[in-house]
Length: 322
Image (cartoon, rainbow, N blue to C red; front, top):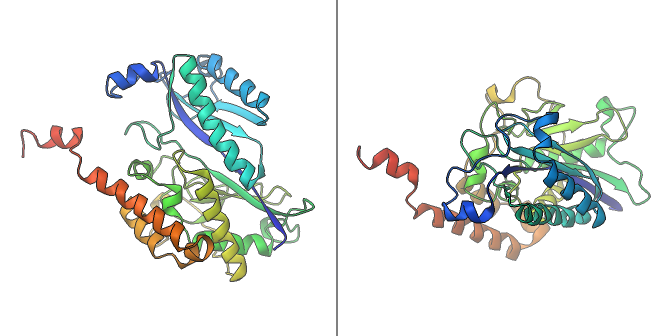
């Protein structure tokens, strides 16, 4: 099509006072977050983790990865790092390097890190929001039309319609584990509805910088446990299918999406997402049967392995009362 996909993946994670070895030895039970309370945009709390985060920022910069910022996030001990918007494949490479670099540097600092989507029921989940847009090969934004509503071009509207139509198809690649689905709950800024909106963090798909040349789509569904190559590729495939099919974009959602009835739900389990992936003609056309069948089997194995485990929850609930 003569287009280039540009992407940025935000990464959220938790920092703990203990080391990886110490937590492993205690079965990862009762880790201590590096801060005691919500540190979103909090100056002093982020000071407590600055010895690690400054090292991360400087190390990534030295490795050729342009870091925009790091910040405290919306839960005790939670942090976020953002690297510069770039072409899709470079971003996927950078995403992997950022995650491994943070783990390595945390290990060297005697700290533990987790990129689990939901490490604790009482804590916020950790996401990997995917910002995306298209450009021509000479760098002209394809999503921007100054004469259109919100500055959204017809191409952008078709692309977004594709993301919505094929949201279920892509779910395994945005939420690949049993734990991934623990993140999707109301009033947590993790979406439960696959709808789009203008700067609305309760919606699964948010339009960022409307009316400007930087107008783009933020997919808020994915967790920080996703594989960036698969997640980004599946987003591009759905968006391009929307362009090819010239899909009409539904009206923007307004209000609290958590409370909305009769709108497109995000699959609530890996089982449901696996069925959608297995039946996806869109992804089979884009990726091939061998790839889709491989990841269907991987998701099934993940579910099967979990299903034969007895959890602490089951023992606590049923040991005496069953």
